[in-house]
Length: 300
Image 1 (cartoon, helix red, strand yellow):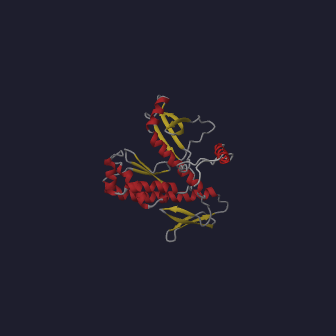
Image 2: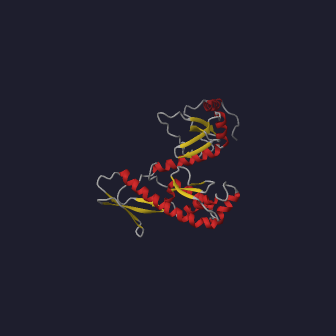
Image 3: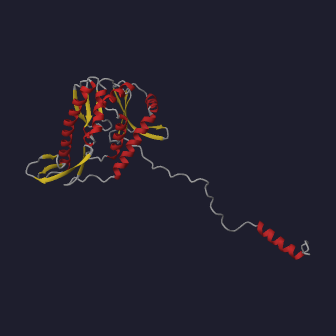
């Protein structure tokens, strides 16, 4: 029968092993692993800020939520504070009698809208910078009515511009010494003429359907508005809509004509738009998406 007693030699070995186990290890401890892996941070989009010329006053700054917004402030004789947002950032126009505190309060009241619009503009700018610029040469593809047309250049003694609708080709006669900016200007004039013709056709189509009459129509080059309508019945439409599908042009036309009955964006206004363009929500989203994807052909 084995003895349960431990002799002195065994006891000494046990003690050595026991105390050796208590000594701190000389091996470096493995790095601690997080319990949950954080998702990657979203790409940071810099909010656009207006450029400052040599004789311009410095930009103003305000914190809206988690964003620092730099904006240009201009004083005028207008009665209320106005905001304009385009690809170059936020511009504020305020009456001369309004204090800076009043301006800051107005900005904070519209803070969510301002930041959303600036983020959209910043995202669009980032996307444009990533796209290859249009090369103004024979065979270049230009956006037109939701599709593309091909630019055709041919040597000529006199400048000319002709559109071959059957083949989707815009032919430009290039005279000796013609510069690139002159070529771009000639193409832009053609786009604007097409826009004026088509927009008037669509205005004349939708106006009777809404039982309204517009008094004047003109093209605009606004950086952040597709159209506008005054109480007096003057309608302006952004000529760059000529790059977009006809269905989206119709939405903007119906939108502005509806203002002749409802000079607001109330439920009654949208019901008016819906009389002739039921899917106005889908068109608004599509127009915003397309505007982010559209290449910039002409700098203003």
